[in-house]
Image (tube, rainbow, N blue to C red; front, top):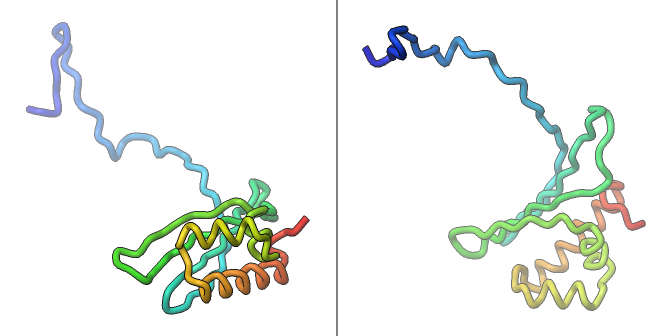
Length: 126
């Protein structure tokens, strides 16, 4: 029988996985919003704090470039950079252009999404 083993004359039976104690896992909740066009998807996410009432002030953005297959995904969590892009900071805009992740129209729509997040008090500027 494969579920038994003898060690020093004593037989041991393999414990059934279903009999093991369930492990308590910690789940992190979030809320999200997204904007999508034919070429791109931007999904902003806010993580809930441990108090399960309030959210952390920073956001993460999952970016999807749908222009080529397979789609490219990137994750952005630098809120200072997001604010800089929204405010047309030359260095931030140069970085976006050099990455070639978005066309000029995509950059414009990304900035509009960031402005909407600011209006909804998702993106903090200070």
